[in-house]
Length: 165
Image (cartoon, rainbow, N blue to C red):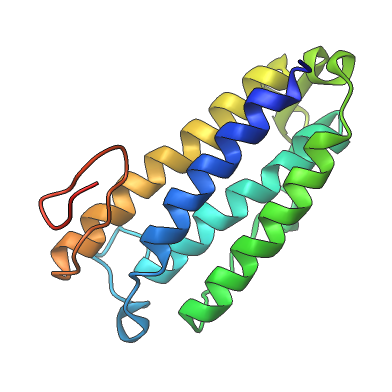
């Protein structure tokens, strides 16, 4: 089995869970924030989708500069647009990941801010921390946003108080 296979399985599993959560977004509350310092619900949802696109940065580039304009996240205008972006990002990420040889996945990758290196680690670790764990973290935040809006939560890693598995 190649190193990409476990990542592909996990990405697809986590993306299905993410989709179930994103489908619950109330279109009328995309601009809602639980606190003035928080991201809006729509912005947070789109940020989660953007993290899937990070796979391409990690796999196709040797480093990424966080000062890049590529990181700007637009305010989404519809749940349908967020879901469409999710599908496109996932299709691209899966295709890119499938084509990666093990040597590439084990090679070092850097995240920088201009000339300052924030971290350098093997691509496998960058995928785990910068993409998969990061998605799970923000998906947890989004589930709290939905709870505060009285939106029933779907099962994530098991039953919720709203629905069984």
